[in-house]
Length: 441
Image 1 (tube, rainbow, N blue to C red):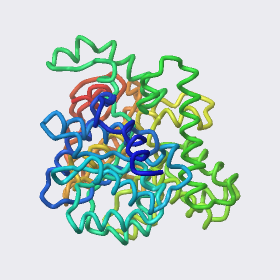
Image 2: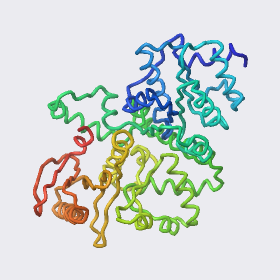
Image 3: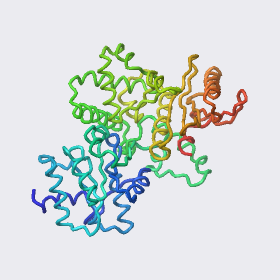
């Protein structure tokens, strides 16, 4: 391709002579703008699970800059999944595209360059590092987490990046996709019935943007399954050259069938008849793809944390419901999964020093989430779909009180489906908070 052909191809991805769809604003925009404005000129890495909206976010970043007066010729978006580039995806193509942009668009200030799905280009890290060292451009790269966190990437760009890890829609974002916003406290109460209906949909189908906008329930499940398959085969099998695909599929389905449950690699190995080392390696790959994540057990020693069972969660409940094995309603586990994801997003966006664990003592008293801010445990959270059963309530409260004394934390909460109250139990104040309200406040 000559320079003119390259620019013609790129024009479909850029704002040079047209307006492009940018979708609904995501919560990550504010963080991205702060990174771009920073004088440190760090490379902004937008990683995350496939189809979580990385390409749309990159457009939103550019659109925001254009709205504030930046000339469009000072921006460049290159999508490396462009079919016209398929036959020549190498470092020479990347260099040629960049030079064509400089020669024809002639930017008159340091341009903002977005390299979308950059993992398709071998050795891209060195090109990006060179641009950054010469301060030629402000650079944003997007791609799957499994590729962008590879060893070569980490080695070449250590200390030169800031990361935005994207998730499917939070529940608050999910509601805004349907025009539901709450400017006053009264709005939450007045629209409660509608919010609960949306929460059930969110719990069933998850938060991938294209799933949220799809109206056909059967098609929602089919698209979710396709996303899941793409993650397995493109982000894991292809990326890591997996040979035992059957074992990977079995292990992945085991995880999506056992969300919110404690696991050990040894136990999985025996149950699935897969070597422990294979379970360990494949679990690492599945986690790097952002399909699942683990929460460690709280302990006062790192060794005990590492040797204890971990609880597994899916990045999206829609994936759980479309791929996991179910023989009964698992509302409690799905609620717990939603809480785990919400806390994970909060850590990325608002509280980088926050860590999340679960608690279990030798008497089997268990607390779903221990929130630790710096050196202090700041909150203990139980998740319970139906707290009206007296035995269930007693068990949840007993575990909270035991953990409260052990961890010296008095902020105790039980997240329910729709029960709200404040009660005193054994001289401790307990807050019962509906899930929908906890996710929005």
